[in-house]
Image 1 (cartoon, rainbow, N blue to C red):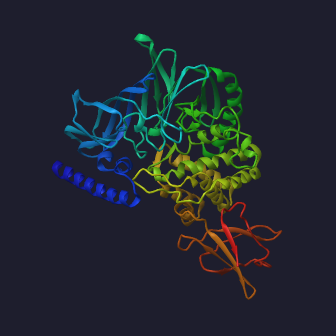
Image 2 (cartoon, rainbow, N blue to C red; image 1 turned 180 degrees about the vertical axis):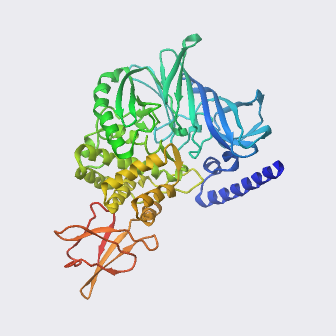
Length: 551
């Protein structure tokens, strides 16, 4: 039986590999992209339960050395698995039950062979020992890797930022978003006089011989790979708390010495209002057990779970500018609101494949408007969303190709936010919409998901089939156009769209009147609104991101 299972697993692996090769050829993706992006049996055969990442940072040499313990549950019988570590880092050994295991490398993938079959359902573990100089980020957080710089006092300041590029740029891991580790211990040893701030709660600080210090951070909640972070510098901290929907939430702020005074004022003005707003819209903060932290970072920012990286220079807006050009974006700190919004969408709810990153970015960009609404009213929020359109390029599909570690268009941010606002308008019940948003966080709590799951939930709980609406905006670069014409005194409308039988409801009115809904299809149909003509029909293009063509 075991021989048959192993043969089937090998056969399926070959089949998936062949499919991945065809896809990568079509997309121009590399073999390395497929090894990183495809869930072959060598990756799905084990489910990660726990990591212990134990790493020493050598700032002078810009190098790392250490180990990572992989504790897992076998999902099938296997003798071989894949984990990931960038090729410029050295795998020194892989140890299982005090024995060194043979391994091979291809691109950034490492393939380990066990001496005896690992049985389905069994819990086991192995440890990877590694070292080397990780890639240095040239323009973090967009260009990933490690940042090595100095603070205003000339002391070392180091941080990680690896979304998209992959966590395996600096530590060995199963580098795929579909399998989040259930819990984790992060141990970082740093030179004398410096501190490390990582995810979760500080469990222990240990002074070592020679003056170095090890910081042990325990993460109790599931965490995705790219969120795991180290932040090393001359940090000081202050604490606060927030009484939220699940009780008392610990707030910790880790800042450089020179930023302490302004951090106390600036963070107080932004963090608690953000938590109150986003708990109202999205439900309880998802990581009460691990707390909430803001950490000074030598880059703009990143949604590192329970340790949000902050680099917006203690000012409102986005580096002092309003991305919406409405003025509303200058009334709050973009990085605090946006990156914290990812705690709900991105960290609590995580896309299985990076191709579905719109789930992270559309909802989080939309959270900026929801925060604006909480502070300044719905009209302000709608203005802010409308202003976001200035950033839309319509240059490609928002959903990327699956299985090759590729994101879709950057329109996932602002076009995605406008899409969600349109869904709210179509549902036409603000409280129902709020409960849908909260329900997503509860139903998919600490899970990895697909686009179909998110759309399916919204369809079910709105009572509307919005699949075609999502398909048009997520899978096609162009926006739908409402074509209006008048023939023999009859006002006619239809949608021109990429999606067959597209039928999105849209708000229209006779000029000066009240808006009402019509639901055109892709064939011309009459508009049953008394007195409406092509000259006086107004389409709600303020809330709908669409084209309008009047013949």
